[in-house]
Length: 114
Length: 115
Image (cartoon, helix red, strand yellow):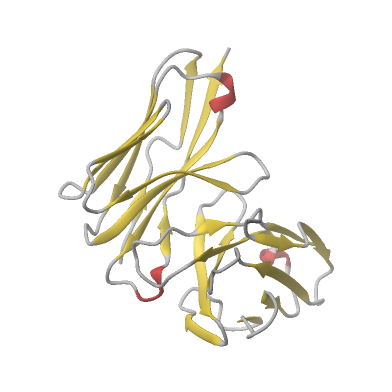
């Protein structure tokens, strides 16, 4: 059974500092891994999708890496801003699972202090 | 191209009532997924449907919960005789194809409160 873990559960940094968010998964047989942002009381915004054949994806200040062999993905957010404060979720889509379902981590709650 | 639509956005029910949550997938998408987010918890898969078929309902509670995706109209998640523990955010996602590489796009969610 796939388990996805995000540590730490919460993170507080001063504005301008780089953010490093970790995601680990127990089963490396994945199609892809996706990072989302969720603001309080809101839905999910997809940030980056990394296919299993890729090592990283970049979008603006965001960079996500994937190391299937070690079961890890890392989301980097450069030069953090107060507007980056949110909960960040990672989710893995397993090859073996019927139904293409996503398995989510518990999220990392980020606070960027001005 | 409108995104995934869910309604209502907020739903309040008293214990014992029925809750119906609707999801309209993105245009051209025929695969729908429902996830539940309990307070202070991550999202958990509930059910995966294609038009007129339930493909995977391994995450659905065995009683009181049902889902459908008819040939015409939105997907419906139905909760009968709601209890306080059903209070959660329910998210719907859709994808265009069945391959695992395909991205799921999420709706804004329905927040169910059971009094």
